[in-house]
Length: 346
Length: 273
Image (cartoon, rainbow over all chains, first blue to last red; front, side, top):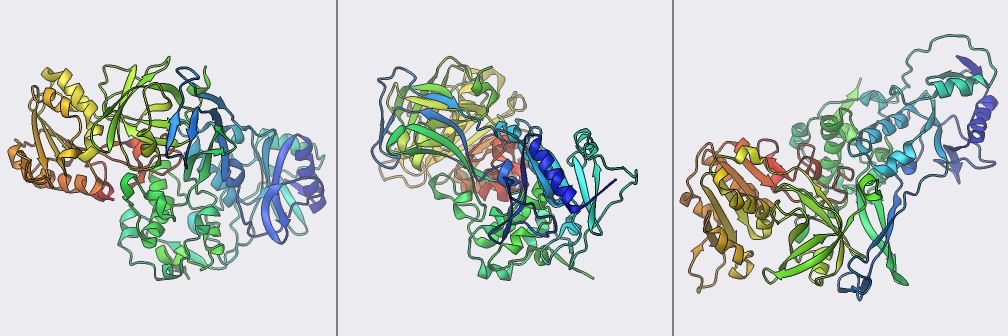
């Protein structure tokens, strides 16, 4: 392990920037700590507990263009009453695939192990056959520098879901706070090359597993579909404002919608976009004819828990909750699922 | 390789070959695929893109023996299906697919088959019925139990006449006018007219609540859950398991694991929602 001062760690960030990566690190933006692209002068924050967004914002953006196409549609009202002209021949649609590839490869700097687990989960979903071409293009050649978490806040639950452990093959460099400085170790060939360039002596020591201190420990129990269904309705849902902040800030919420967008000035140039969709909205489960499967907020709250725990475990062998607690911390009513499906551990 | 072969989100070109009015609210579009073929099996679906309007999933309702053309029967319900009503022959559309898991035809062969369809749900089963009619010798007794509300709601009227020569057809209307001379009532009222056995295969498609009640009735009459198949409907957006909009109870995705499920694979609650 290499012993680095805080200045040297920030130097490491600049080094990765110089290597041509788009570096994404926790940055204080007007008092809100967010993962953001490091530009000149921005200083990554290292000693932090919670960031208000997650790597998902970069790997699976809230709005992304899938492709553009030319349509021969003439819109006379909102996409409903329309006429197709056939003057352009038998096939007037021309589709231009627009992969919107990132100009540079992405590097996440100083993210906590829980966020690394969220990337591992998104990989399972988006890279399973058939792989999502947009996600895999962003994911390609990604570099990660993980900062081990020392202490969680009152909303964290990584100990309950085990996401403080760093998933194998996902970290390139791991940083650990030690006194005033940091201990750095590499976990991949690329990480080793970058650390070697620093010219610091390696003491060869092995690092054990580090579990962050928790304010309160929760034992999550009722994680099967039947047990979530059999619970009484959560009384705190009375104060749910349906803002969907729980799903918007969740690092693993990937549910989406695909829409066609065009400007009324140029209605023949259509953009197909993918946007995120929240299961907390009623329209999430509405099908043709207005049949809605998740009618009540209680059903939708249970649905979120079922998707995170039993469904994900069954489909991808990994729970979809990475214990970051963003869904509780960002909820205006502080609706806490930990007490609903678990209990405080002594 | 072409972009649409690499990228599952990019639709392929097709043009409307003909439009047929089936009922007041539904039409059958015959699509000609331009420079490609879609070898599909009964039960699979496609995503139909109407330029400038959007995409929606529809079960293929044509015979699998013609992979150059697809027929989709579409009822006017939402934004895309409303726009479908304005399509004319020659118009261009985009098609992604075929997607999803088809009916396990090998498990149907040499067996009695009961096909229960209500309303526009018959569109999802037409492909299967056409396959059975074309390969009639491979199947034993086949019964189509088709229910609708009003006589105007009945679709595939011409087909029903020609199918009647090959398979047994029972049509029942639940809200028929006094002039209707045929059977009345719900499809479950007429299950006594069908020879049911433990070995037979039953296929159901209709509105979610109706499918749940029919499946429950068939189970009560002793047909094993593994022999009852349903074709589920959800508003799939991507069709390849990446948007989770078609997630159902049990953590299955309708687009990837379905839309055809046997009732023992899924929770009964997943059928009715």
